Image (tube, rainbow, N blue to C red; front, side, top):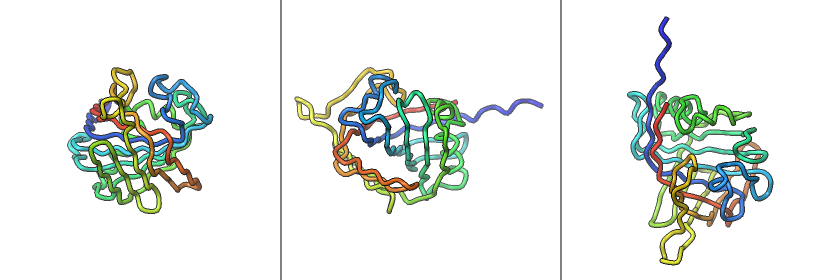
Length: 206
C-alpha cells in the first residue's frame, strides 16, 4: 500500500506572544537555548490567519491561541500545551489547526511534536483579535485578556529585532504586555508589564 502523502499547508498572518520574562525575552536571540528570566516560561500565543489552507481546507480569518508552560529553556522541551481553536472554525478546519499546532503537520511548527511532553488538548472558544498601529489585543472570555504594545524606538516607530534565525520570523517587534492575563488549566498568570513580541508570519509545511 502506498504511503499517504503529507498534507500541504500554509499560514500567513500575525503572531503575538506574551510571556513572564523581563523585556526582552531571551528566546529570540538565543533561539530558545537561554533560560527564561525567572527559570520557567509561562506564556500565551495568538496566531491570526489572514490567508491559509490545509490541503483544500480554508483557514482564512481564523485565530488560534496557545497556552504554554515550559520548565526551562524552550529548546530543551518538556512543554505543557493547550490549544484554543476559533469557534468560527469548521470541524475540518479545527482538526487542521490542531494538527499544525501540535506539530503533527510538519513545517515550521513540526518541532513542537518533539517539545510537547503534556498536551492538554484543544478547546473551541470565541476569540477576538484586534490591532492598531503598534498595539494588539486578544480576548478569549474568562481565559485570556491580553493587550500588547510595541516598545517605542528612537524614531518613534517600534523597536525591531531584524535578520534573526528565530523560527517564528526573521523580523520581530519588541513589545510588552500592557494588560496580560491568562487563567486556565489550573493556572492564573498575570503577565502585564512583562515581555511580548509581534511578527508577521508566512509558514508553509510539511
